[in-house]
Every structure is written in structure tokens, then in C-alpha cells.
Image: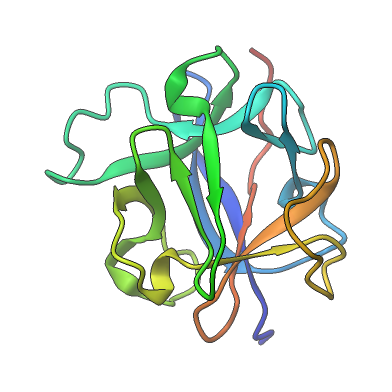
Length: 167
């Protein structure tokens, strides 16, 4: 089994939303790639630029403090605006200052990703991988495609698992 893991969007959870998970990386799979749009400050999917990383609709205190991280249609919502934070444990934050977080700090394959209170541990630290092999300098220019990989041991990355459909 590969030791390189990527973030992906796995299952359709309604309302044209797809839950984010971490999984084995596959640089040849277009659904594993994202682009940053500097104008809107959103992370868009390479497979469909109208889809962005966001907070789940109706995510009212999901597991009390957790808000599901999903891919869904871009609406211009402030909850779809992303900020990058540099440092040894670079994290990705929404406008509400929650960090993209691997649930429970577990490095297991197919683990879901959510927004959680920032705490600077490895399950909130991410690599931005432009080529699927090396890590480029940050920040990336607008429109450059990249993978989002965890800094935990196996470097699992964000990945999109099923067809997005339209809308």
C-alpha cells in the first residue's frame, strides 16, 4: 500500500455536497487536484471550477464543535473563503478561523475531514503539492493546480471520490 495519502471528496451527502476525506494519493486522478482563486479566496476543484471547499449546509455545531468540510457549488459565501497560514505546520483556515482538520487526529485511510478549533497539531498541518511529487514554495499563484496532503506520517491527501454531477 502506498504511503502517500491525499485529500478527496468521497460521498454525496445531499444538496450537491461531497464530504472531504483523506486517502491514498493518485496524481493521475484529476479529482484529486485543486486550484486557488485569489480573487474569491476560495479553493476550487480542478475537475469543476464551480465547486469549492466549504462548510456543510446545515452544519450547526456538527459533533458540537466540528463543521463538516465539503466540496459544493461556489455561492460567494464568506464560509467558502480560505486563508493560508505558513509556518512549520501550515494550516488552512476558513473565514471563521477554524482549521481544516482530520477528525480525531487519526491517520487512517478514508478518514473524514472537518473544520475544527485551531490547535496546531499534525492533523491540522498540510502540504500543498503542486506536482504530486514535490512541494513548491508558497503561496501559489492563482489558478495553479495542487494537491492538499496531510503532514501526518503517510501524507494522505484530499481527494474527490465520486462524480460531482451538475449544479
